[in-house]
Length: 214
Image (cartoon, rainbow, N blue to C red; front, side, top):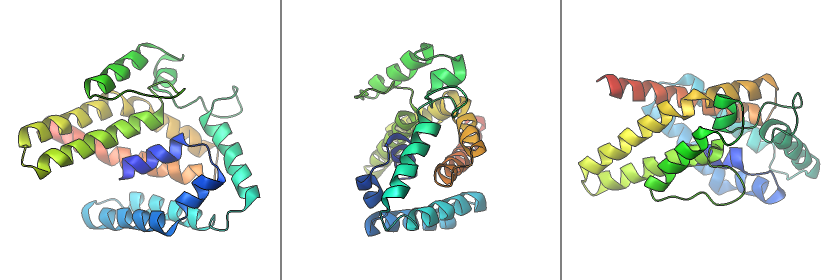
């Protein structure tokens, strides 16, 4: 659920419909469910604090103020589009952060992993966009859960291993730096999103490394 939510937040251009969706009773209830799950199952006060900050930021948007939506659109362009050097951080593509250029070998690597899993990226963004990589992790988590629900432990373990590999070999090689860059720009909305993303990934990284060394 958290991977899906973070993917949504870092992919969508803010609009009135997006704000209405994020601040709906259903979505706020879902976020509070994630918070309670973290409180119950995960030893991370930092993660809970980041999520509470984001819930609070979303709560302040409930009136659908047009000026606020315009500001969110400006922040999205500044922090996630890489319009020009110095205006915001480099855009959130693995190839940019790892190779210094768009469409490097990292693009073909993640594209091959998606296709091996039966997925295809549609739309104008390159496959190594942060939103797609987080969505791929959500897909692998969901698939693992489906296998476990029918007692298929072998394929569930393969899905879990795929998660660990993609996290450690791709996401953790660049996303923490992108999140740090966003935090350095002091956005009241995308700052908590970046903080939550980084806190979650650090926890996932620890668990993945523990499994690899077991």
